[in-house]
Image (cartoon, rainbow, N blue to C red; front, top):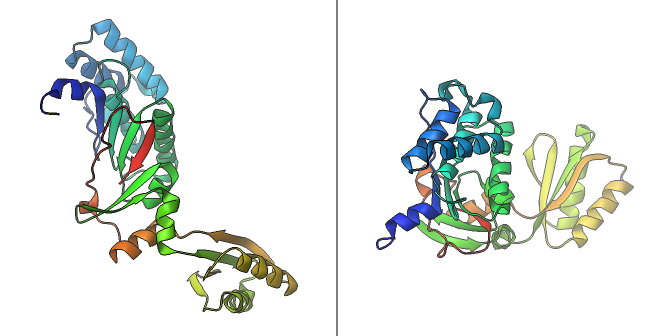
Length: 269
C-alpha cells in the first residue's frame, strides 16, 4: 500500500457510512464527475454513468438532483459512485461501511441484492455492520470485533455453534394454550421454557430428537401452532455470549482480506 498506492486505489472501492454524493448535482452528473476526476474522457464517463444508473435502478432518476433522492436512492447512488471510482472494470475489493444504516426494510433488501450481485460478479466485499442478521444473510466469513480486537472468526454456522445447542420455538394458534405448550416443551427439554414474546415460547434443546418429540406431544395434545421451528442461536446471541454486551458504534473496525485476488466472497465485521 505504501510502495504502490496508486495501483491500490485502482483496485479498491469505498462506500462510507454516510452518502457522500453532491446533492446539488444530478445522479448522472455525480457519476460523470467521478469519471472525469479519474481522467476518463467525457464520452466514456457519460457511458459508464449511464450503465451504473441502469444497473442500480436509478436510470429514471438520473437527471434529478441527488438532493431530491430518498435515503435508499442516495445509498444506491453512493454504491454506484464507489464502483465508478475504478479506472478499469470493477474494483477487486469493495469496502462498505454500514451501508444500510437508516434504511427502511425494503431499501435495505435492495442494497443486500446489490451486494450479492457485486460478489456474484467476482468482487470481494468487506462489510462492517451492527446488524448481525445482515452479516448472517450476506457473509461468507464473519469476524466479531470487540473494542477494536477480533475475538472470533468463522462462518455464521461456526460462530453459532459457539453458543452451543439449538432452540425450539413454538407459537400456538390459540394464545390461551401458551401455558400448555410451554409445559410440553419444558418437559421434553428438561429445562424451563422462556417467553421472548407474548404469543411465543422457546426452549434450548440438544439435538433434533427433542424437536421430533415436541411435535408429537403437541399433536397429541391437540395444540395447533402457527409457527414451529428448530434453529441455531442467532448471531446477536453469539455476540452477547462472546462480549457480554450488545453491538456498539465504535466496534465497527476490522482488518481486510490479505490478497485482492482471493475468491469472490463477502466478509462482514
